[in-house]
Amino acid sequence: MESAERMCVFRLIIGLMVVPFAVYLYFASGSAPIATPAPAMPFEKMLASKALHARLDREIPESVPISGDESNYAAGEQIYEDNCAVCHGLSGKAQTTIAKGMYPKPRTLLEGKGVTDDSAAENFLEGGGWHTDDG
Image (tube, rainbow, N blue to C red; front, side, top):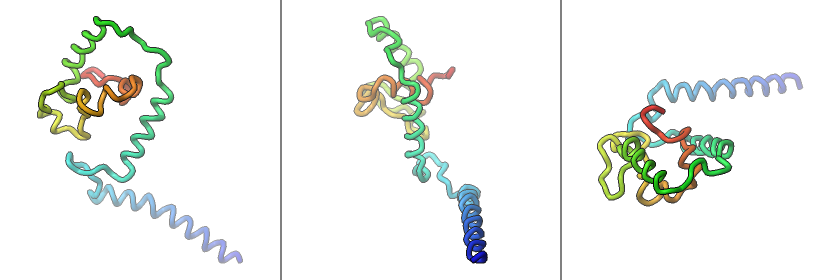
């Protein structure tokens, strides 16, 4: 009986060692996708989505931090044009060369599924806030 238990423990230990070694070989052999047009790695989209939604659930504001008046809309439009449009585009304009070369591809926020279809919290908190040159 002891021999069977030892063999079971031995197989468990070997199994636990094989998985990290296989992951290491996957990356060390260059099999992991790193090129711009490469497909996502296994489980990459699922893990990124889980992390995003966990953060959204934790940090979603309970109230709107600014009022929705014309001056704030105009200021927001200018901030978007100055800091965001180069990657996320302007309505009716072609994608910029910078956006075409990015990985992952930036969402086109003003057409189709984008800012207009998401909750305010999801848009603000995705990636830790608005993406600008200074943070």
